[in-house]
Image 1 (cartoon, rainbow, N blue to C red):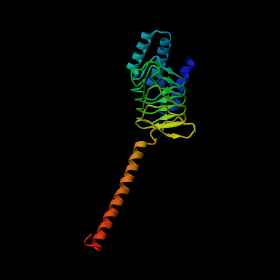
Image 2: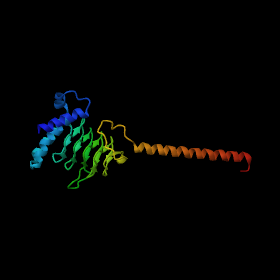
Image 3: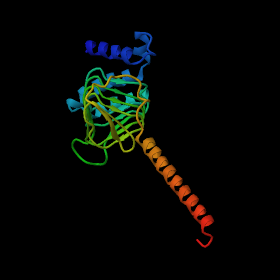
Image 4: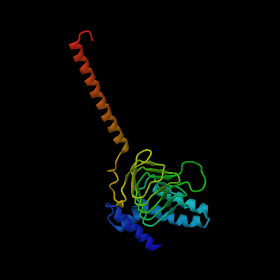
Length: 223
């Protein structure tokens, strides 16, 4: 248990340049408190102490602003940055070395039974405000861009952005875990630029037709 706690503290220093001391991390990092509380709640949940597990989960939510259902399975070196507004559903499965940011929801899409929440494989990053919904799989080494809504499986080594989420990068190269998740492609803006280019082209064609019509009218007054 203490070895896992040391790992959790170490990953904070690895991922957050604002961390200055172990005492600061242990006492002030809500994401760390939520993970440690979840470990206790999850152990009780597996032993079928459901009420006690949920009680610990709700107390943790009250103090941290992070809601992790005690049934969720979370791997090693999981890092929640800031964390306010994070929701992780009951049947979520999160692998090792995953990172999520504030406002992320790993939720379901309705009242279906059984596996109804996402599975995150190892080394997945889910950026600020993203919603990953349903029993889908986010492949290893993949990134979900800020504000995205993901409703379908994401392949390994991919970056997905937009509403609904669209895979924009898949090159088979391992995705480095870092904080540069704001510089991601925007398929919506790309589509807008394509539309602007088409409108500009059509406007030029219309102007050319008007010009030809004026020239023809000067050459032939009866035109």
